[in-house]
Image (cartoon, rainbow, N blue to C red; front, side, top):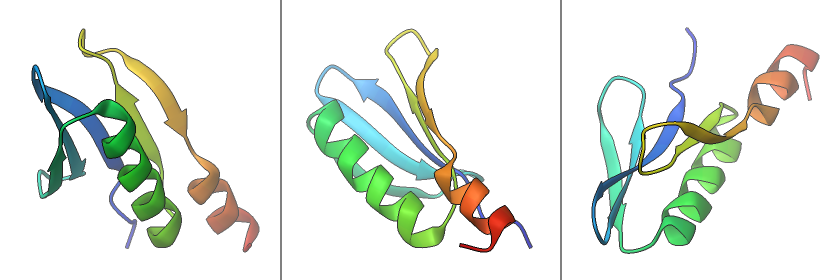
Length: 74
């Protein structure tokens, strides 16, 4: 079974959400930096991808290291 991608996105002026694919929220944070740090940690721990969106909904950063390490067995 494929592991759910972790996504970081804004939900308000001072509210950033860390969510896994499928809609399960993993936390709310006051800054993008704090949400991104938690999201990256979870993605590495779960060995899955991380997507970070800006306020316009565009993906600003995508970290697929978890995906590549799964494919390479590392």
